[in-house]
Length: 240
Image (cartoon, rainbow, N blue to C red):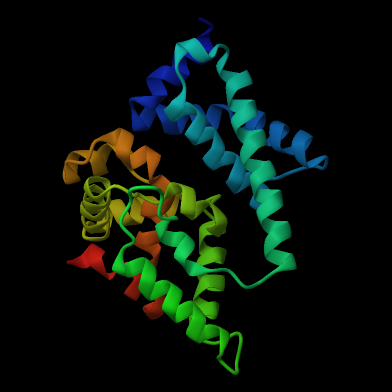
């Protein structure tokens, strides 16, 4: 195993090593982003945030069996930037987004929750609103803008949302712990990612669950700590 790949494994288990590892590979991240975007990308561009989050994701999901780390990280960054480009295209073409994507589709054998039904009902009411930019629609736009800084698209939340009741309860515990701890909340806002190690230790929720539902957890934390009263109703069960 080469030195970079070995260091990536260490970074996944140590937040301090991870932060240093990201700084060491900043030029690599920017070069990959620039190649994919076919233009020069700087750390002031939105694409930098997307690529940075993707690099962090690559570190946390990397295993020796996946081969050379930089090749693997490059693929993850490319995939996330392509998702970002597509989501931006869809967003520009169609501003209306159904907010029940927040809670995922009900698959076979899943119970359709009251939360999903409430969101669908409110979405129908919104369609009859004389002002199409009022209420929930404005909040969706605001949340989408905030998520963008974290390299997350509103369209990705459906896939990241928990479905099993046990997982929903675990995610609720994690969010309550996160928003109730000023240091962890500040760390999330500053670094634009979840403080995985600290959150797992404080909440008792295993790290794999946090990583799998990272985007959902960040979105819900932003909703519950922001000025998004309509959206907060949809995830009110988190506070219970």
